[in-house]
Length: 290
Ligand SMILES: Nc1ncnc2c1ncn2[C@@H]1O[C@H](COP(=O)(O)OP(=O)(O)O)[C@@H](O)[C@H]1O
Ligand SMILES: O=C(O)C1=C[C@@H](OP(=O)(O)O)[C@@H](O)[C@H](O)C1
Image (cartoon, rainbow, N blue to C red; front, top):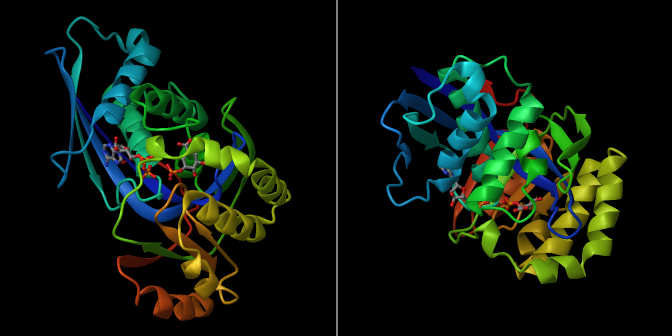
């Protein structure tokens, strides 16, 4: 049997690496995963247009779903295998949560293939993807902030140490994403540098917990650009037009949010810079089986 699901990417409100608490918002860029069950015992992934991509994360997702619902699905684990294929509009390792989108889409597609779509609620399905990301070594905290935003849609504020959701709200912003040409794998981030700015990250989390997302983002943006060695000039160029702007995750992408007219002005500046600029919106609808 085959299963198929899509999940959105996300942008950062507060990076969780400093404190274990983070916040993120879903954006309208998608990853699709297709899972075909086999009986050759082999679990193998491929990524469309990226033959050299590391597929451990999506393979771990399938293993975690097999472990969680295999008995209920009547799966013979001695022969159970899968072929996973992802297709994505989300640049990998650019700070836009390609890993969370791929994990959520793969977990849901596997549940679909096993005919177990109702066996797990979305937040538990999300936690399985986070566990798979930890097992694959692609994350520092597990990134439950990013994964929950992608799974549920809207903006989420989370404790990534306990994988608990503190807050989820719908937001309706235009979004501008600027991705410079370089890439930054989260697993390679300077965690010690992030921990040095924990008091500022805590302040950003307090703002996000009060629903002051755009202020939280902007504080986060300046703090983490400085901490991780990115030039904050794209942020300065986005203000005061954008309602909020930040470095997304461990970079190198920047995100700006606000109303359409305000972002037109930011877009004129960001498109002059090397790399790509994408205009999109926030997403209310999270990951779903299709
Ligand atoms: N479409 C995809 N299919 C399979 N694995 C993916 C996909 N996108 C991302 N990944 C996994 O996530 C890793 C990148 O994660 P990370 O460095 O956290 O960047 P991001 O901020 O984009 O999530 C990749 O090395 C790969 O293991
Ligand atoms: O690996 C992690 O624990 C995290 C990585 C960062 O995101 P990216 O993966 O987008 O860099 C960050 O925003 C998130 O809060 C936690």
